Amino acid sequence: MKILVTGAKGFVGKNLVSTLKNIRDGKDRTRSFSVSEIYEYDIDSTIDDLDVYTSKSDFVFNLAGVNRPKDNEEFFKGNFGFATDLLSLLKKHNNTCPVMISSSIQATLIGRYAQSDYGKSKLDGEKLMFDYAKETGAKVLVYRFPNLFGKWCRPNYNSAVATFCNNIANDLPIQVNDRSTELELLYIDDLVEEMMRCLEGKENHCEFDGVEAVAKADGKYVYVPCTHHVTLGEIVDLLESFKEQPHTLLMPSISKNSFAKKLYSTYLSYLPKEKVCFPLKMNIDDRGSFTELLKTVDCGQFSVNVSKPGITKGEHWHHSKWEFFIVVSGKALIQERNIFSDEVIEFEVSGDNIQAVHMLPGYTHNIINLSDTHDLVTVMWANESFDPNHPDTFFLKVSE
Image 1 (spheres, rainbow, N blue to C red):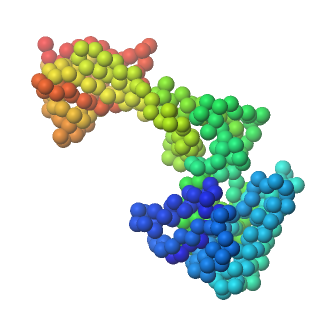
Image 2: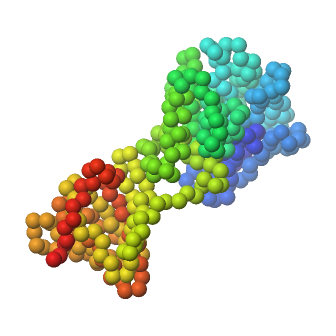
């Protein structure tokens, strides 16, 4: 498949083109289609380039447009005008391949969008596409995008999320006039995945009830079902918690497909070089070291323990807390004993054959470095973060 992407150097274009290149180059083999050519058209391209591309393309993603013009005339020239040129060239070459166009929710001209020249230019572009479909029989896919966010989005331009991510990551001030203002947000990876569905002929269709997309199999428009309604206050609070993570080690809940998960990925893409790496507090003594790595809201804590040759660590038990010990380097003997029994259960483990060993509630346990020359490195997970006010840790030797 030969694919033309206009606006290829923009935010959506970059993400789409990078995905298409992975398919073309055989790095993504999960798709049901192949990509042989990607034609990238942008502001530095020529009309001759577009002429050639429209003669060869099997699918067109029209992402080109103007959203921050010097004057309102540029809206219509950049949005409606370019779409006219694109469709004229496709007709010139009798190319009736599918065409996707990126419109905007502002094209509804409802509520705060009622007097939007940008919205009017997008609505004109939609009508142009539907008329083109009637005239040529070509399949057209019109998406009305809500607010978009994700990596490579330009801050201080037309995305509050990009601006907040960039400024908070770089210790710059932000301005929030009303924390209760709600945005409908669409994550770039969700959008690109929907675009892949277009290439498979499996796009999601809808009609609009005001500004709300309503799923409909034969709907006039197409849409991405997965969007997030979030207030500015919620966005800022999440970003502030992300910023503090290197200090608190606390990872907030980032469940599958959650807004927080997608926002965290976006935030990290704006980190300056000096914040990409951060120190961890190592608790060092004569026996080795113990370092907390990560704490979670509801899935416990991760740590790494280093034991010097011949050293025994642990010799304690817990009422409710339980742990995994995972030796990743060296050789160790792990011993456990029910505190009401004399029977000791033992596990000899090493980094050459990595295993996870449960530290059972009500069992006192230890870990012994069996080497006389090499350090023992153990990754440890506990089902709860350490609470100094309720440590649930009681000294008791496994063997007397």
